[in-house]
Length: 339
Image 1: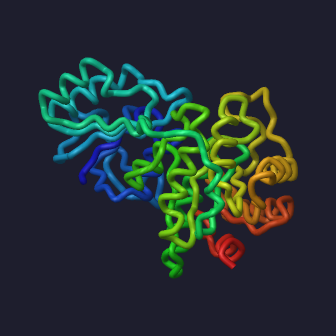
Image 2: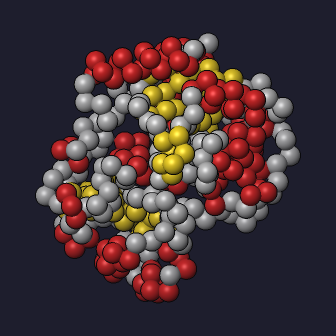
């Protein structure tokens, strides 16, 4: 499928959905929409993902595209009205629109009418299906080893780490799959339950449903984590995934040098040993999950030597193997997780 990605004024800094799709999804990206960087190319900003021209808007996309994908995940998941013209233009051109927002495009009267008129699909990725229910407490019974990425905060790389570990495990000959729990993972994998949109009583059940569906088909399941157990807004979804997955192993993801919760800077990041105790103690009544490995996001550090020192310090503090999976690969982590 040929797509354009909407990432206005956020690329690449906060457009993590756009970056995830560019790096992992099986789409041909013909253009990225960003008014601030129009005239550049993706490769001018990020070197290790699919390249594409950056244009000011949908009117500037010369290539034929099948869909416009909204590649921004703002706090609260709202729709910015400055995007309306681009979505409208896409629908008028007969393009489907893929959105991971909490604002459902199919409930927008203008977009719904244009989609019907032009035979387009509006895929609201964050809309869960109607048959979800409470967990039965059976995720621990599957044959697969369940490995969950957990974080010290949002946007520290949990989805990226899950994707990298699963991909590299498969390349090494292991039978591994991803369990997508957020909008970006669902866009990449083409299926999944959007855990942060599920009724709270059904959160663990929504994760369990996916574990049970895939657990006897694969040897390893890498579950995409969400939020952080100490996050003032999103800790509930983190706990639901932890208990619903009944994970066997955890990978603690952190951003180098991060000292406060993003968007809630009055709350400091606790110490790494505190996170280890919090996650393992919370998991313990339901599973024997331990933090077996760690992942450190050093993307804001330009110097490789500085990044390596940061990873080494993280290894020492965590007391487990760790790596920046983009910069230095996953070998040390997979050796610990798959042994």
